[in-house]
Length: 459
Image (cartoon, rainbow, N blue to C red):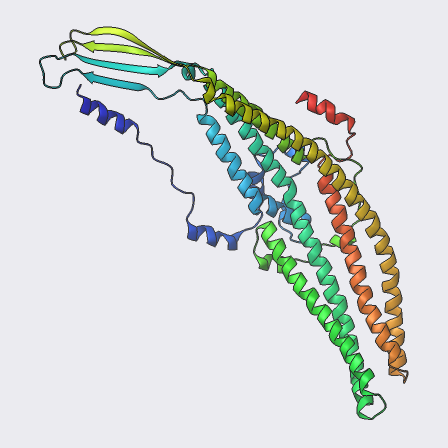
């Protein structure tokens, strides 16, 4: 067989056609309008995740059909949240790369014609195989272990993204309800003040009320309108945040009914879960670092290639001389020793990061619990103030409409506006602190810390 024919055959064998993309840019953008968190989509989004470890139950069909329920928004986040989709794609890519890891190396083929067109017609053909990769040992085995660790790490990252997604949506939903409540209460106050300004104008025109107090009354009303408009703007921003974190259209958020996020009974777990998704990711970072260190150490193995040697003294198939070829290449130690030390340093740093992550979760949980306790006290105090200012405002309005002075009206109006802001802020802070405590504690919050060491030993 001629060299040209052999080369053509090898080139044909090297052809590989990648699959076509699942969609197009236009179709991808158009799909946004039809997004709904159906049961099939949510199940598909969660199929790679360890739902038991995350303590996640798939939302029911009824929940996924009702935007007033948590399951609808959590299911949407599982299916459409950008962070979850990014982590899912990274996990699928890592699993695909794992299939190719440790595969046998390329087959080497050499064809030698000792004298083109001359009297010597000796032709030699040599084929060699990477023996160690063919057996799956040495560098190939280390590469396989590293790919497996990388896949597990990618799956843990997906689990962490899935764990975080509902909390991101719930934080935004708390902001929506807090802003809506502020806007509603400030609107009521502004409307009531607007009704009383008619009497202020009449009294001013008749000379029974000075321009200064009338101007103050109007200024207070403008301040209330400003608070109302600020709350409406905050609500619009918060709805946009819900839409982005859930991966849905803004119209879907705008059409949702109240979730009562601010009315839920808050609780703060006592301890973090030793198998918290964030800790699982770092534990698998350690596995990847160890595998990477072993992969670098495997560079010290020699390269061994073995194969047949075919000689054709007459340039034809007959006569044929059959032999063998063995090749060995030993690496120079300086080519891998520095890389090994660097990989060992990186491995040690992961161990430090694990301790830092445990500390961050513990400190964060303690801080969230303290925030929650303080917010509870603020809610009680501001609720009392809110009721008192509501009563004072009604009394001041009644007195002013029956001929009383304007000063109590002005004072009660300002106090009422401030009390609304403080009370809503306290309720929102309580909801956020409780949510943050649950996020930091993990899926199985309250597991005794003594179990953490045993868990680590088992792993």
